[in-house]
Length: 397
Image (cartoon, rainbow, N blue to C red):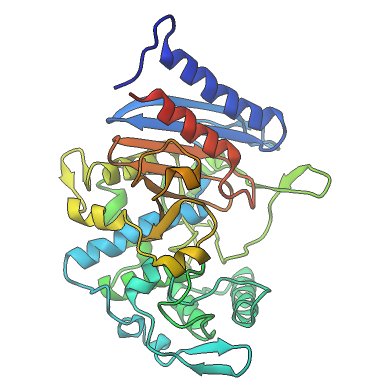
Protein backbone atom coordinates (compact mmCIF):
# COMPACT_ATOMS: atom_id res chain seq x y z
CA UNK A 1 0.00 0.00 0.00
CA UNK A 2 1.23 3.50 -0.83
CA UNK A 3 1.57 6.01 1.99
CA UNK A 4 -0.54 9.16 1.99
CA UNK A 5 0.82 11.72 4.40
CA UNK A 6 -1.48 14.16 6.13
CA UNK A 7 -1.26 17.51 4.44
CA UNK A 8 0.20 16.22 1.18
CA UNK A 9 0.05 13.58 -1.52
CA UNK A 10 2.96 11.19 -1.03
CA UNK A 11 2.87 10.08 -4.64
CA UNK A 12 3.16 13.65 -5.89
CA UNK A 13 6.37 14.14 -3.94
CA UNK A 14 7.68 10.73 -5.01
CA UNK A 15 7.19 11.44 -8.70
CA UNK A 16 8.64 14.90 -8.27
CA UNK A 17 11.72 13.40 -6.61
CA UNK A 18 12.12 10.79 -9.34
CA UNK A 19 11.81 13.39 -12.08
CA UNK A 20 14.40 15.54 -10.35
CA UNK A 21 16.91 12.67 -10.04
CA UNK A 22 16.65 11.75 -13.73
CA UNK A 23 16.56 15.35 -14.96
CA UNK A 24 19.64 16.27 -12.92
CA UNK A 25 21.63 13.42 -14.46
CA UNK A 26 20.88 14.77 -17.92
CA UNK A 27 21.17 18.48 -17.19
CA UNK A 28 24.50 17.98 -15.43
CA UNK A 29 25.87 16.39 -18.60
CA UNK A 30 26.67 13.13 -16.85
CA UNK A 31 24.43 11.24 -19.28
CA UNK A 32 22.76 12.12 -22.56
CA UNK A 33 19.49 10.42 -21.66
CA UNK A 34 17.83 8.66 -18.73
CA UNK A 35 14.59 6.76 -18.20
CA UNK A 36 13.00 4.77 -15.40
CA UNK A 37 10.06 2.44 -14.90
CA UNK A 38 8.75 1.27 -11.52
CA UNK A 39 6.12 -1.46 -11.19
CA UNK A 40 4.34 -2.24 -7.93
CA UNK A 41 1.92 -5.14 -7.54
CA UNK A 42 1.61 -5.35 -11.31
CA UNK A 43 0.78 -1.68 -11.78
CA UNK A 44 2.91 1.20 -13.01
CA UNK A 45 4.06 3.36 -10.13
CA UNK A 46 6.37 5.61 -12.15
CA UNK A 47 7.63 6.20 -15.66
CA UNK A 48 9.45 9.07 -17.27
CA UNK A 49 12.31 9.76 -19.67
CA UNK A 50 14.62 12.73 -20.12
CA UNK A 51 17.27 13.75 -22.63
CA UNK A 52 18.42 12.03 -25.79
CA UNK A 53 18.88 8.46 -26.87
CA UNK A 54 21.07 9.67 -29.73
CA UNK A 55 22.38 13.23 -29.77
CA UNK A 56 23.66 13.22 -33.36
CA UNK A 57 20.29 12.09 -34.71
CA UNK A 58 18.28 14.21 -32.27
CA UNK A 59 16.32 11.18 -31.03
CA UNK A 60 14.80 11.60 -27.57
CA UNK A 61 14.95 8.96 -24.86
CA UNK A 62 11.55 7.27 -24.85
CA UNK A 63 9.71 4.34 -23.40
CA UNK A 64 10.38 2.15 -26.42
CA UNK A 65 14.06 3.12 -26.77
CA UNK A 66 16.17 0.00 -27.31
CA UNK A 67 19.29 0.02 -25.16
CA UNK A 68 22.43 -2.08 -24.72
CA UNK A 69 21.81 -4.19 -21.61
CA UNK A 70 25.40 -5.37 -21.18
CA UNK A 71 25.52 -7.26 -17.87
CA UNK A 72 21.79 -6.98 -17.28
CA UNK A 73 21.82 -9.86 -19.77
CA UNK A 74 23.09 -12.11 -16.97
CA UNK A 75 19.83 -12.54 -14.98
CA UNK A 76 18.12 -13.66 -18.20
CA UNK A 77 20.87 -16.21 -18.82
CA UNK A 78 20.52 -17.50 -15.25
CA UNK A 79 16.77 -17.94 -15.75
CA UNK A 80 17.38 -19.84 -18.99
CA UNK A 81 19.82 -22.19 -17.25
CA UNK A 82 17.32 -22.84 -14.47
CA UNK A 83 14.65 -23.77 -17.02
CA UNK A 84 16.92 -26.60 -18.15
CA UNK A 85 17.68 -27.55 -14.55
CA UNK A 86 13.96 -27.76 -13.75
CA UNK A 87 13.47 -30.10 -16.70
CA UNK A 88 16.26 -32.39 -15.56
CA UNK A 89 18.35 -31.69 -18.66
CA UNK A 90 21.28 -30.41 -16.61
CA UNK A 91 22.45 -30.84 -13.03
CA UNK A 92 24.05 -27.87 -11.32
CA UNK A 93 26.97 -30.05 -10.20
CA UNK A 94 27.67 -31.20 -13.77
CA UNK A 95 31.18 -30.27 -14.93
CA UNK A 96 31.25 -27.74 -17.75
CA UNK A 97 33.20 -30.23 -19.88
CA UNK A 98 30.22 -32.64 -19.92
CA UNK A 99 28.56 -30.28 -22.41
CA UNK A 100 31.56 -28.34 -23.72
CA UNK A 101 34.44 -30.84 -24.12
CA UNK A 102 36.88 -28.01 -24.87
CA UNK A 103 36.92 -27.28 -21.12
CA UNK A 104 38.32 -30.71 -20.28
CA UNK A 105 41.62 -30.57 -18.41
CA UNK A 106 41.68 -26.82 -17.81
CA UNK A 107 44.66 -25.48 -15.89
CA UNK A 108 44.89 -22.86 -13.16
CA UNK A 109 47.43 -20.02 -13.32
CA UNK A 110 49.96 -19.67 -10.50
CA UNK A 111 52.26 -16.64 -10.49
CA UNK A 112 54.95 -18.84 -8.93
CA UNK A 113 54.55 -22.04 -10.96
CA UNK A 114 52.72 -21.04 -14.13
CA UNK A 115 49.95 -23.42 -15.23
CA UNK A 116 49.04 -26.05 -12.64
CA UNK A 117 46.30 -28.73 -12.56
CA UNK A 118 42.88 -27.76 -11.26
CA UNK A 119 41.72 -29.43 -8.06
CA UNK A 120 38.47 -30.22 -9.87
CA UNK A 121 36.67 -29.11 -12.99
CA UNK A 122 34.45 -26.01 -12.97
CA UNK A 123 30.77 -26.94 -12.74
CA UNK A 124 27.54 -25.20 -13.68
CA UNK A 125 26.99 -24.05 -10.08
CA UNK A 126 30.39 -22.31 -10.21
CA UNK A 127 29.30 -20.48 -13.37
CA UNK A 128 26.07 -19.28 -11.74
CA UNK A 129 27.98 -17.87 -8.78
CA UNK A 130 31.04 -16.45 -10.62
CA UNK A 131 33.32 -18.79 -8.67
CA UNK A 132 34.55 -20.72 -11.73
CA UNK A 133 37.89 -18.89 -11.99
CA UNK A 134 37.12 -17.97 -15.62
CA UNK A 135 38.29 -14.36 -16.15
CA UNK A 136 37.24 -11.43 -18.28
CA UNK A 137 39.91 -9.54 -20.24
CA UNK A 138 41.98 -7.89 -17.53
CA UNK A 139 45.49 -6.45 -17.69
CA UNK A 140 46.13 -7.16 -13.99
CA UNK A 141 46.43 -10.96 -14.34
CA UNK A 142 48.14 -13.31 -16.78
CA UNK A 143 44.87 -15.16 -17.59
CA UNK A 144 43.17 -11.79 -18.06
CA UNK A 145 45.86 -10.66 -20.49
CA UNK A 146 45.54 -13.89 -22.44
CA UNK A 147 41.76 -13.53 -22.52
CA UNK A 148 42.18 -10.01 -23.90
CA UNK A 149 44.21 -11.42 -26.81
CA UNK A 150 41.58 -14.08 -27.49
CA UNK A 151 38.74 -11.54 -27.58
CA UNK A 152 40.70 -9.03 -29.67
CA UNK A 153 41.44 -11.71 -32.25
CA UNK A 154 37.79 -12.78 -32.42
CA UNK A 155 36.62 -9.18 -32.83
CA UNK A 156 39.22 -8.58 -35.56
CA UNK A 157 38.07 -11.70 -37.39
CA UNK A 158 34.43 -10.60 -37.23
CA UNK A 159 35.40 -7.18 -38.55
CA UNK A 160 37.11 -8.94 -41.46
CA UNK A 161 33.80 -10.60 -42.27
CA UNK A 162 34.42 -13.99 -40.65
CA UNK A 163 31.69 -15.72 -38.68
CA UNK A 164 32.88 -16.32 -35.10
CA UNK A 165 30.01 -18.01 -33.30
CA UNK A 166 29.26 -18.78 -29.66
CA UNK A 167 30.87 -22.21 -29.73
CA UNK A 168 34.11 -20.80 -31.15
CA UNK A 169 34.12 -18.28 -28.30
CA UNK A 170 33.76 -21.22 -25.93
CA UNK A 171 36.88 -22.82 -27.36
CA UNK A 172 38.78 -19.54 -27.05
CA UNK A 173 37.65 -19.01 -23.45
CA UNK A 174 38.59 -22.59 -22.58
CA UNK A 175 42.10 -22.08 -23.95
CA UNK A 176 42.90 -19.59 -21.15
CA UNK A 177 43.96 -20.89 -17.72
CA UNK A 178 41.70 -20.15 -14.77
CA UNK A 179 42.61 -17.33 -12.38
CA UNK A 180 41.62 -19.41 -9.34
CA UNK A 181 40.76 -22.94 -8.40
CA UNK A 182 37.08 -23.68 -9.16
CA UNK A 183 34.90 -22.89 -6.16
CA UNK A 184 37.43 -20.33 -4.95
CA UNK A 185 37.07 -16.53 -4.78
CA UNK A 186 34.23 -14.66 -6.48
CA UNK A 187 35.54 -13.12 -9.69
CA UNK A 188 33.65 -11.45 -12.52
CA UNK A 189 34.28 -13.11 -15.84
CA UNK A 190 32.92 -15.03 -18.83
CA UNK A 191 30.97 -17.51 -16.67
CA UNK A 192 27.58 -16.35 -17.96
CA UNK A 193 28.76 -16.63 -21.56
CA UNK A 194 29.84 -20.21 -20.89
CA UNK A 195 26.35 -20.89 -19.53
CA UNK A 196 24.99 -19.67 -22.86
CA UNK A 197 27.27 -22.12 -24.64
CA UNK A 198 26.02 -24.95 -22.43
CA UNK A 199 22.40 -24.03 -23.13
CA UNK A 200 23.17 -24.25 -26.85
CA UNK A 201 24.82 -27.64 -26.48
CA UNK A 202 21.99 -29.09 -24.37
CA UNK A 203 19.05 -27.64 -26.32
CA UNK A 204 20.47 -28.14 -29.81
CA UNK A 205 19.42 -24.57 -30.60
CA UNK A 206 21.26 -21.30 -30.78
CA UNK A 207 21.18 -19.46 -27.47
CA UNK A 208 19.11 -16.70 -29.06
CA UNK A 209 16.55 -19.16 -30.39
CA UNK A 210 16.25 -20.84 -27.00
CA UNK A 211 15.66 -17.50 -25.27
CA UNK A 212 13.15 -16.46 -27.92
CA UNK A 213 11.07 -19.61 -27.51
CA UNK A 214 11.35 -20.08 -23.76
CA UNK A 215 11.34 -16.50 -22.45
CA UNK A 216 10.94 -13.68 -24.96
CA UNK A 217 7.80 -14.96 -26.72
CA UNK A 218 5.85 -16.03 -23.63
CA UNK A 219 6.93 -12.86 -21.80
CA UNK A 220 5.91 -10.60 -24.70
CA UNK A 221 9.39 -9.14 -25.21
CA UNK A 222 9.41 -8.28 -28.95
CA UNK A 223 12.30 -5.80 -28.75
CA UNK A 224 14.72 -8.04 -26.83
CA UNK A 225 17.42 -10.08 -28.52
CA UNK A 226 21.03 -10.23 -29.64
CA UNK A 227 20.60 -7.87 -32.61
CA UNK A 228 18.55 -4.87 -33.66
CA UNK A 229 16.60 -5.31 -36.93
CA UNK A 230 17.06 -2.58 -39.53
CA UNK A 231 13.48 -1.37 -39.11
CA UNK A 232 14.13 -0.71 -35.40
CA UNK A 233 17.49 1.06 -35.67
CA UNK A 234 15.82 4.45 -35.25
CA UNK A 235 14.96 3.36 -31.70
CA UNK A 236 18.43 2.01 -30.84
CA UNK A 237 20.21 4.24 -28.32
CA UNK A 238 23.79 5.37 -28.81
CA UNK A 239 26.04 4.63 -25.85
CA UNK A 240 28.62 7.20 -24.83
CA UNK A 241 32.04 7.18 -23.21
CA UNK A 242 33.43 10.02 -21.08
CA UNK A 243 36.55 11.91 -22.14
CA UNK A 244 39.20 13.29 -19.78
CA UNK A 245 37.73 16.77 -20.10
CA UNK A 246 34.26 15.57 -19.08
CA UNK A 247 32.58 15.40 -22.47
CA UNK A 248 30.58 12.38 -23.70
CA UNK A 249 31.44 10.99 -27.13
CA UNK A 250 29.90 8.05 -29.00
CA UNK A 251 31.45 4.74 -28.00
CA UNK A 252 33.01 2.73 -30.80
CA UNK A 253 34.41 -0.72 -30.22
CA UNK A 254 33.67 -4.12 -28.74
CA UNK A 255 35.55 -4.91 -25.55
CA UNK A 256 33.75 -8.22 -24.84
CA UNK A 257 32.88 -9.27 -28.38
CA UNK A 258 29.39 -7.75 -28.33
CA UNK A 259 27.91 -6.89 -31.73
CA UNK A 260 24.33 -5.99 -32.64
CA UNK A 261 24.05 -6.49 -36.41
CA UNK A 262 21.57 -8.92 -37.95
CA UNK A 263 24.49 -11.19 -38.85
CA UNK A 264 25.52 -11.59 -35.19
CA UNK A 265 27.13 -14.98 -34.50
CA UNK A 266 28.39 -14.72 -30.90
CA UNK A 267 25.33 -14.55 -28.65
CA UNK A 268 26.86 -13.37 -25.39
CA UNK A 269 25.10 -14.67 -22.29
CA UNK A 270 26.98 -12.14 -20.20
CA UNK A 271 26.60 -8.90 -22.14
CA UNK A 272 24.93 -9.33 -25.53
CA UNK A 273 21.23 -8.52 -25.22
CA UNK A 274 19.36 -5.36 -26.11
CA UNK A 275 15.95 -4.51 -24.66
CA UNK A 276 13.42 -1.84 -23.67
CA UNK A 277 11.96 -0.77 -20.34
CA UNK A 278 8.69 -2.60 -20.93
CA UNK A 279 10.32 -5.77 -22.26
CA UNK A 280 12.68 -6.10 -19.31
CA UNK A 281 9.84 -5.12 -17.01
CA UNK A 282 7.94 -8.20 -18.19
CA UNK A 283 10.90 -10.44 -17.35
CA UNK A 284 11.40 -8.82 -13.96
CA UNK A 285 7.66 -9.03 -13.18
CA UNK A 286 7.76 -12.75 -13.87
CA UNK A 287 10.63 -13.10 -11.41
CA UNK A 288 8.94 -11.17 -8.58
CA UNK A 289 5.72 -13.11 -9.17
CA UNK A 290 7.37 -16.47 -8.51
CA UNK A 291 7.94 -17.37 -12.16
CA UNK A 292 4.41 -16.50 -13.34
CA UNK A 293 3.55 -14.03 -16.12
CA UNK A 294 -0.09 -13.49 -17.08
CA UNK A 295 -1.02 -16.89 -15.74
CA UNK A 296 1.87 -18.70 -17.45
CA UNK A 297 4.31 -20.50 -15.15
CA UNK A 298 7.73 -20.11 -16.79
CA UNK A 299 9.79 -20.98 -13.71
CA UNK A 300 8.77 -22.70 -10.49
CA UNK A 301 8.24 -20.54 -7.43
CA UNK A 302 10.85 -22.55 -5.52
CA UNK A 303 13.28 -22.13 -8.39
CA UNK A 304 12.95 -18.35 -8.29
CA UNK A 305 13.43 -18.56 -4.53
CA UNK A 306 16.61 -20.56 -5.10
CA UNK A 307 17.85 -17.95 -7.58
CA UNK A 308 17.33 -15.05 -5.19
CA UNK A 309 19.60 -16.18 -2.36
CA UNK A 310 23.23 -15.54 -1.54
CA UNK A 311 25.43 -18.50 -2.53
CA UNK A 312 28.81 -17.13 -1.43
CA UNK A 313 30.54 -18.16 1.77
CA UNK A 314 32.11 -15.58 4.08
CA UNK A 315 35.47 -15.72 2.32
CA UNK A 316 33.92 -15.35 -1.13
CA UNK A 317 31.75 -12.45 0.07
CA UNK A 318 34.94 -10.58 0.89
CA UNK A 319 35.98 -10.76 -2.78
CA UNK A 320 32.49 -9.65 -3.86
CA UNK A 321 33.11 -6.07 -2.80
CA UNK A 322 31.29 -4.19 -5.55
CA UNK A 323 28.08 -3.57 -3.61
CA UNK A 324 28.30 -3.46 0.17
CA UNK A 325 25.63 -5.34 2.10
CA UNK A 326 24.86 -7.72 -0.74
CA UNK A 327 25.60 -11.35 -1.42
CA UNK A 328 25.58 -13.00 -4.84
CA UNK A 329 23.97 -15.98 -6.51
CA UNK A 330 22.62 -17.00 -9.92
CA UNK A 331 24.41 -14.05 -11.55
CA UNK A 332 22.66 -11.48 -9.33
CA UNK A 333 23.25 -9.48 -6.16
CA UNK A 334 21.01 -10.25 -3.16
CA UNK A 335 20.42 -7.78 -0.29
CA UNK A 336 21.58 -9.24 3.04
CA UNK A 337 22.34 -6.24 5.26
CA UNK A 338 20.45 -2.94 5.01
CA UNK A 339 22.96 -1.12 7.20
CA UNK A 340 26.02 -2.14 5.23
CA UNK A 341 24.22 -1.29 1.99
CA UNK A 342 22.80 1.98 3.41
CA UNK A 343 19.43 1.22 1.88
CA UNK A 344 15.81 1.02 2.96
CA UNK A 345 15.29 -1.83 0.49
CA UNK A 346 13.73 -5.10 1.61
CA UNK A 347 16.02 -7.97 2.53
CA UNK A 348 16.08 -10.49 -0.27
CA UNK A 349 15.66 -7.99 -3.10
CA UNK A 350 17.82 -9.03 -6.03
CA UNK A 351 18.97 -7.83 -9.43
CA UNK A 352 21.99 -6.55 -11.32
CA UNK A 353 23.27 -3.63 -13.39
CA UNK A 354 25.19 -3.15 -16.62
CA UNK A 355 28.41 -1.57 -17.82
CA UNK A 356 26.53 1.43 -19.20
CA UNK A 357 24.70 2.09 -15.92
CA UNK A 358 21.45 0.21 -16.49
CA UNK A 359 19.97 -1.10 -13.25
CA UNK A 360 17.25 -3.49 -12.10
CA UNK A 361 16.01 -4.36 -8.63
CA UNK A 362 13.36 -7.03 -8.04
CA UNK A 363 11.68 -7.47 -4.65
CA UNK A 364 9.25 -10.42 -4.34
CA UNK A 365 8.33 -9.30 -0.81
CA UNK A 366 7.04 -5.98 -2.14
CA UNK A 367 6.03 -7.19 -5.62
CA UNK A 368 8.30 -4.38 -6.81
CA UNK A 369 10.40 -3.84 -9.94
CA UNK A 370 12.70 -0.83 -10.37
CA UNK A 371 14.32 -0.22 -13.76
CA UNK A 372 16.71 2.61 -14.58
CA UNK A 373 18.25 2.97 -18.04
CA UNK A 374 21.22 5.11 -19.06
CA UNK A 375 23.96 4.58 -21.66
CA UNK A 376 27.26 5.83 -20.17
CA UNK A 377 30.20 3.45 -20.59
CA UNK A 378 31.79 2.35 -17.33
CA UNK A 379 28.97 3.79 -15.20
CA UNK A 380 28.03 0.57 -13.38
CA UNK A 381 26.01 1.00 -10.17
CA UNK A 382 25.48 4.76 -9.85
CA UNK A 383 24.48 7.14 -7.02
CA UNK A 384 21.37 7.99 -9.06
CA UNK A 385 20.30 4.33 -9.01
CA UNK A 386 20.71 4.31 -5.23
CA UNK A 387 18.64 7.49 -4.93
CA UNK A 388 15.91 6.01 -7.12
CA UNK A 389 15.82 2.89 -4.99
CA UNK A 390 15.66 4.91 -1.74
CA UNK A 391 12.90 7.17 -3.04
CA UNK A 392 10.84 4.24 -4.30
CA UNK A 393 10.97 2.20 -1.12
CA UNK A 394 10.21 5.38 0.80
CA UNK A 395 6.98 5.76 -1.13
CA UNK A 396 5.72 2.31 -0.16
CA UNK A 397 3.67 1.55 2.93
